[in-house]
Amino acid sequence: MEQQNDISGRLALITGASGGIGAACARQLAAKGVHLALTYSTNVSSTSSLAEELKSKHSDSYSLRISIHKVDVSSADEIQHMFEEIDQQHGKRPDILVSNAGYGKRIPQVWDISLEEFDYTINVNLRASFILAKGVVEHMKSQRWGRIVFMSSIAGQGGGINGCHYAASKGGLTGMMKNLSTRLAEYNISVNDVAPAMIGETGMIPSASAIPEVAAGIPLGRLGLPDEVANVVTMLVTTGYMTGQSLLLGGGLK
Image 1 (cartoon, rainbow, N blue to C red):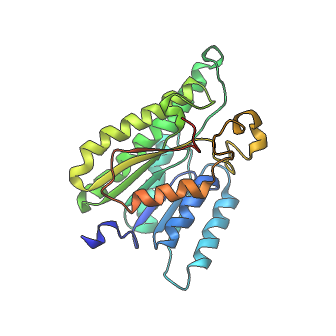
Image 2 (cartoon, rainbow, N blue to C red):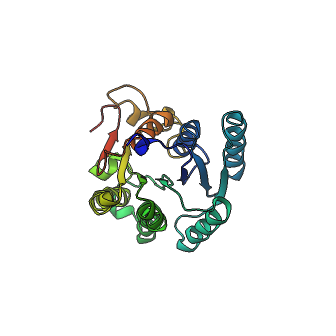
Image 3 (tube, rainbow, N blue to C red):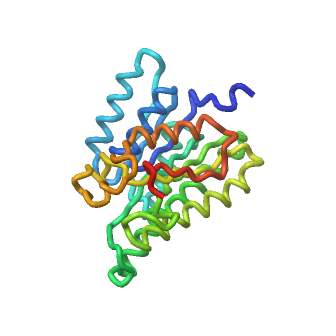
């Protein structure tokens, strides 16, 4: 059973990997010998730079395979095309899925949220994770090993600053995770989510100065770091006995 949690040589798909949490996850998994398929929506230069950085850093220890894919995760067709590229470039589907790409516009009041905004938020934050899970699960089942990690949010528990559209998308994600974890456990596939709150150095929150009134209310007195979220993701993919859990990472926020 020792190799249960050995992830070296596995292939991880990380969506939204051009910076922030996704890039931090890529760095940590690469350090453990994991090959990578990284997606981005617009920032090809950052994603390419990350790939080159990791290949260079690990060139002495193992031959790291990295592919990068331009994907709008609100499009089922683009996700399908990405899987076709991964099949061609890696010869297999991912063993590890980190569904990290997300979207959130701060619109606190329900009367200000348009139906189009609601639908787009659901598509990116919930529907995409469903399509991604469907794309990897047959491969995971056939080899009786898989790790799925969704990126949820404190908003999924009713908190946060982004409004009910965002809360609905993240709450749905946690509900889907809990259901999938019970269905897939017999195939040795773990399914969990990480629920961060107020993480800096990301597209949503570049720094504390972007949300000074909210940052001031964090009990720990600072924003979280992308690396701290990646620590939890790495723990989940190397701890197969943990499944069906939503781990809140919020500096004391509830």
